[in-house]
Image (cartoon, rainbow, N blue to C red; front, top):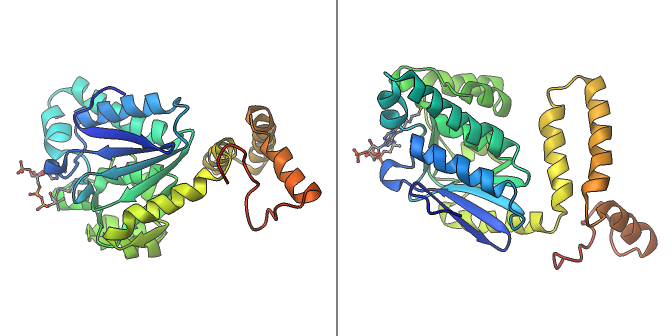
Length: 276
Ligand code: COA
């Protein structure tokens, strides 16, 4: 990995943590940060050493959203710069992150405003600190939730909650984010690291190719007709059989039906290479 100035990337036990790292600006997303995120996610997309990706923020903030100075004001009078800034943001926070080939987890450690909902919702799973503060603050400075934020909240929050928070700009904490389904769970800030480790350990016991197919199918099938989804899911199932180097389906069937080592209703099959 190259040296980045606005983010950091660390891999341990096949879990790669990408940290938005501009704590003095509450990790607001500047064009440089967005360039670096696009570069890092592009490299990590084909990194054989990553089984799970965690996205978090340095200091007391996940991200204060788009950098109002560098992303908005400084590109206001240059259409080419503005277009490039928008394209890069959408490319990393939507295309690269949402369709990242491994499971992604947002660890929301603090402030999470506006544009930060894009990477938050693009992650497959999310754990918040109770103390985190979420807000659709766009209304507070005279814009609508742009980029893909409005679509993201329509997808990930209930109808009334999404409109309420978009129309009032009111902030809410981690527990409230869990109640409305924006995150999977919320824990006291000092337990966030451990909660993320527990979740990544659980995921590491599972076959990454199966997880990849599961999330890709979920993301695409949601917007298809039933006829298209039926055909697509059959094709994805066939693809998985040929892509899965560890032959998980066969192992699972054998360990349940023949050796009777597992009950798949209660636990995953034993993978030879994960220590499980
Ligand atoms: N864009 C650009 N700069 C930002 C920023 C953003 N979204 N969020 C914070 N900063 C900068 C501040 O301008 C300040 O810079 P300075 O030290 O050069 O003056 C620095 O980060 C620290 O911010 P500050 O407001 O002093 O921190 P705080 O801890 O008191 O408050 C927030 C934190 C997140 C509540 C507050 O910074 C804030 O409201 N930010 C904007 C959130 C927002 O609406 N984002 C846009 C969504 S579309």
